[in-house]
Length: 82
Image (tube, rainbow, N blue to C red; front, side, top):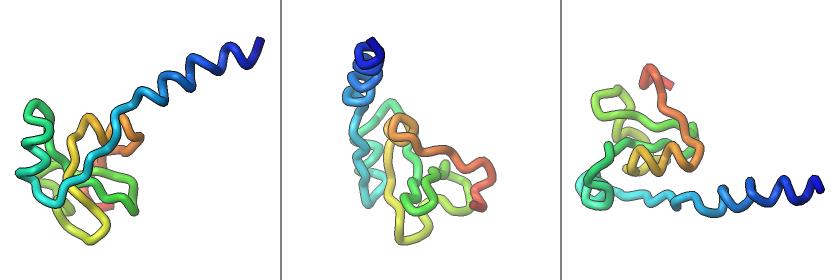
């Protein structure tokens, strides 16, 4: 019985959109024209909005669509300083 309850949860996770990283902001915007482009720092597991101090900074990040970042479990940096 317990195994039957876990199956729907696994099915929902399998349907998540894949995260598509881009080296340029323009490429990311073409991929998701209706979404906001953010800078995702893979090492810190945070994303930054344009205008924040760490947007497009560092070697461990890429531009991605905000919706894909959220769906993949990444969180927004509130201050841009983390």
